[in-house]
Length: 190
Image (cartoon, rainbow, N blue to C red; front, side, top):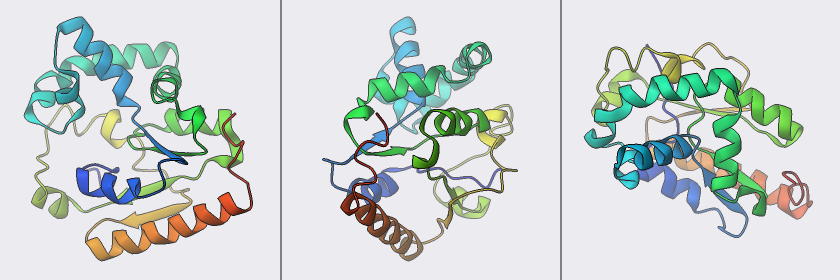
């Protein structure tokens, strides 16, 4: 059973994205996978990025291919996403869909102390009320559960209510602003 509810949904992205776009970029590790799949299969890339039933139709097909690619090079999609979103042009990166320990490992190996890990959790009842439906063969796989046993996080946010999320994001924005003021983020990713 997964409790991890990573930055999914328009609401949460809007809350994060209120950071100044001059400084921040949202990186989706799944975007290069979905872009490849859209090209190879002639699918709608934007629909694959959504949480729609359209994406779910192809998700089981995408998994074996992406797992094989990761087994050959665990950083392949992290690198591709950083490039795809021109992330090196911004000091603040919000990686919205990290699902594996190897994703965190890649970012820490490549960017060290600049990395702050944030786990966003919501109980299954809350997730179900937002439309999540457990699917065997998907939601019980590494792609959804690999981080469930990780205990070392810089911050854990409980995503049960708007007030909790708003407070956590305001606290993070203040910390980010302080780092920008001290010029700590200016060259963190170069």
